[in-house]
Structure formats: structure tokens, C-alpha cells
Image 1 (cartoon, rainbow, N blue to C red):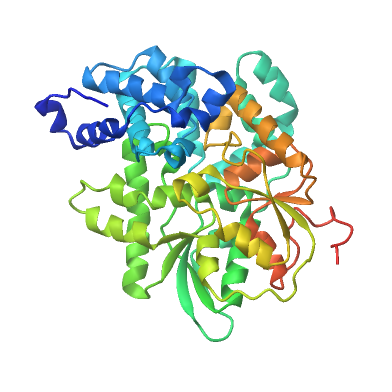
Image 2: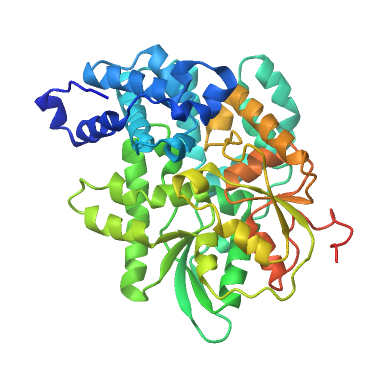
Length: 440
């Protein structure tokens, strides 16, 4: 794609990087076939190619974001399916992330939108606040239809997605060391994150059990927290960088004291963000070098276990598992085989979901802020899953688990929970009491 930025504009590193990305695009349109919003609506402006044109026009002319630009960028899920499809290597993720930063600095949203986005940024990245909100949400959950009817759809969707009974505070949130069983073969940091320990602590607990069972010491360091992805994808550049720096400080301190082999992440959305810290902080004179090192140490839990000596001796044979490939895992991190191979080795019958490249509609805060599109995507995803008639659904991201579980009665768990079960642990909490017997 031809561009016409001035030298003054290109002096800004963000603009220079965006120009490089824009010039890689050859207008081929392959991305439109795998873009969920284009597949649903057929609007060119809701395709990656269309959004690229809108972003190019905004940046080249150095003009504030318009309502049209905001509408179509807001509808982007950042699922990154377009990057998997693109034959030219267009790094759409970095381009749309910068577009969101420009939107937040040049466009004034309506008051209701501003308040909602500020509330999400204040609430979701903080465990204590989120847990308190979930307990308050439980008794008012029946009011969701009323709130939607009076124009408060985002709040209604938050209530609908909230668990009916939030889990109790998990010990996994506390800074501590879980010793390896037997001879220590490795040492990892476990990123607890923000939403996972509040909504699905069973995922983190299963990860600790599997890792320690096979000789890996697990450290939950003091000072780590949200990866920054939630605010990052809402254009909150400074807040995202602050979250990244806080985590880097916590992990660097652990590197200096005891060292570790990897930063293991169970939420693939967080994993994609952490693996991008090196890019996010590339111009930071203090953090650039260590951020790149930290990004190189980050690994998804299934990515790590695929390299470990995991033996499956107590395998629940024959259970049919529909594997949902989270977008941040398959498109963001290019991890496609490891989770399925681990589950197959564990004795599960793994079934690929039709249209597996399409997003379920979770996408961080998307299912709250863009609930109409998110519901259509969830209905499409659940419809494809239910055709397979699985016993359980496995997904490697807490957002996907929450989103899909809201649309089906089939239990939804993280793959590591099934792996824990197949290596001597108990059945995942979501399965306990739902399966009369495990097929022999």
C-alpha cells in the first residue's frame, strides 16, 4: 500500500511503525474471509482491509478520529485471524492497537460510554474490586433484562456473564512457592493475572498440581498483577505500560533471587500481551531490554507442558472433548497443536470445532461493550460445538470459557484441568456431578 507520511510524522516511532505495517498491505482481501465481523455483516469497513484504510486516512492526514472510524475500530475483536490469513505479513495487531490509542486521545465519546469504559478499566484488572462486584451482582442478576431495556446493555451483559455464585477467594492469589514433588526438574513463575483467580481459580490450581507433580517448582511472585491487556485494548496506553512495568519488576526480582525457566500463563489473552511486552516497551530507555527478555520467557501452560515429561497413567478414556482454539492462542501466539496433542495423549477423544478460526465473541471487554455482535458470534460458535455432541468443551482462555459457558449447558473447562484429571487429579469442578460415569 502506498503511503504519504511527512518526515515530521515519521519522526514519531508509533507513526513510523504504523507506516511500515500499512505499506505491507497489498489490498488482496484474503483477510475478509476470516474476519468475524465481516463474515457476519459483509461491511467492508468491518473487515481488516477496510479498517486499515480508515486508519491510514486518519494517520496520514493527522486528523482526529471521526465517529465512523471509532464505530468500526470498536467493532474489531482483535481476534487476529486476519494475521493468520494474511500472505503479506501485515502486523494488524500493532496497527489497530495504535489506532485505539489515537482514538482515545483525539475523540470524545458520549458520557455513558466514557463512564462504562472507565468503570471496566477500574474494576476488571483488580482482584479485590472484581470479587466484590461479583458478589454484589449475584442478587441483582435477574434485573439484567430491565437494565438492557432502559439502554444499559453493557451493565446487563456484565450481570449475565457473572457467575451465579462466585468462587471463594483462592489461596493461589497469594505470593508463595509450591515445591516440586520429588526431584526438582525445573522452576517456573505462574502468572495468576486478574480475572482468572477470581472467576476460575480451578484453572490455576490445576496448573500448579500438574507442574509440581512432574518436578516443576512453581513460584507465584509478590507484586505481579493484570497483564495490562484489558486497558491496552481500550486504548489506555499509559495504564497498559504501567501494568507491564509492574509485572516486569516483579519477575525481574524473582530472576535475581531464585531464577526460573519460564513465565507460565493459563489465560491465552494474557500470554499474547506478555509476549508483546518487548514491542510495547521497545522505546523505553529503562525497560526495553528486560521487557524483550521477559517476553521471550513467557509460555502458555500447554506450550510448556508439551515440552515436559508428562505421563498419563490415570487417563479418563473415551471422553469426547470439543477443543475451542482461543483466538489469542491460535492467531496471537500461533499455538495450535500442543493443547490438542496433550489431550489426545491423555486419552480424550478430541474433536475440532467447525469454523474453529472464528472468534467466540469474548475478546476481553468486547462481549460487554459490543454485546449484540458478541451474542451472534457465541450463538454461531455454540451451534458448531453442539453439532459435535461432546461431553465437555476445552478452551485455553478464561474469557472464552466464560463466554461459551453462558450459551450452553455443556461444561466448559481449561485443558489443564483435564490434563490434571488425567494425571491423577480429581475431575474438574465444572464436571463434578455432571457426568454419571467416565467411559471405559
